[in-house]
Amino acid sequence: MKTRCYIALSVLMGVLLCACTPPEEKPVAETKPRAVQVETVVSRDLPIVVNAVGRLAPDREVVLSAQVSGIVERYTVDVGARAAAGAVLVQLDDADHVLALQEAEANLQTARIRLPVEKNAYRRAQRLLPENAITPELFDQAEAAYAAAKATVTRLEALVAMARRSVDKTAITAPFGGHVTRRFVETGQNIAVGDPVMQLADMQSMRVNIHISELDTVNLDKTDPVTVTVEAYAEKSLSGRVDQIGIQADPRTNTFEIEILVDNPAFRLRAGLTARVAIQTHVIPSAVMIAQHSVLFRENRKEVFVVSPDNRARARTVQLGRIAGAEVHILDGLRPGDNLVVSGAQYLKPGDTVRVVP
Image (cartoon, rainbow, N blue to C red; front, top):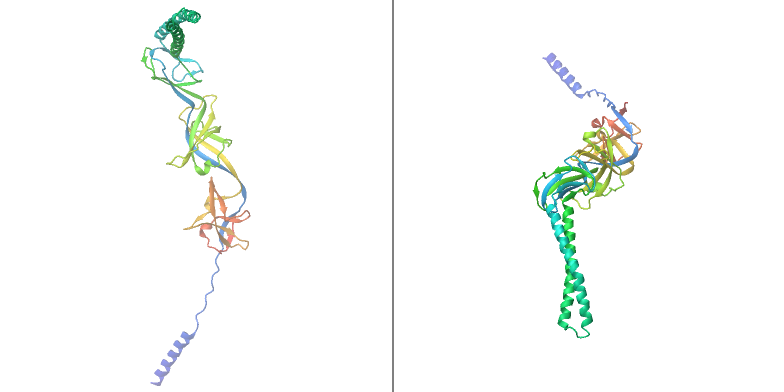
């Protein structure tokens, strides 16, 4: 019995001793430095370029209409042909108009023959009236007849001029040099006043209409350099110039219309081709530019990591500006000389030890 008591007591003492012995402390493993790549932040001048897409159109384009009625006698140019300024494009049959002119000229000649007769009668009445050789009524008649004869001559001169203009208008001419883009008539066709005859386009210069935002418009000037690239001739960029700047925004898009002119001396450019326009509006001096992928987008902020002199990761909240290719302009949060983490930032926490690798 005593033996059993001694054994139980020994076991109890062993359990108590184990319970009172403190556990062995495990050594804390040091955090391994994270490998990152860094670049030194620098500043440079940033050209601000506005890009837009439009379509080429002729500098000037007009639909010529008939100013007198008549039958189309012939047309001298067709679609695609170039016409010089003042060249006859369509000739109408002018026979009826010539006859009307001859009639008007004949009437004018008759009136001019009659005018001296009435003039002499009026002068005789002026001499006879003081002598009471004629009555005042006869004098008034002579005076009225002379005035009517002069008015008739003036009216018929106007009719002759109008008839001559009608004859001239039977020849429909080009108001400026250009290419015929459409022909609306055929030989022998009877046309009325206002009917379209031909469409003429001046393609010595081509025009591109684009729309840009209000933020870009306020910095735009007619002296800004313009580069135009036409997809059909992508191997060569063309120099353009700002011709017109809209002064009222489109209420639907809140953009302003800008008209760009491009010289086309060889007539390679055609209306309707797609053109990409790049306008350098201004230059931001000493702009801090970094790679876009260096920026981490958090819930309510945008941040980057820089490496401090003690090889610790430090978070910086940044304010972004314009994007230029793969880079973004930093308005606030970075300075030239900062060591920016460009690879591995997504695994960092503020204060982490880092190891810079190539």
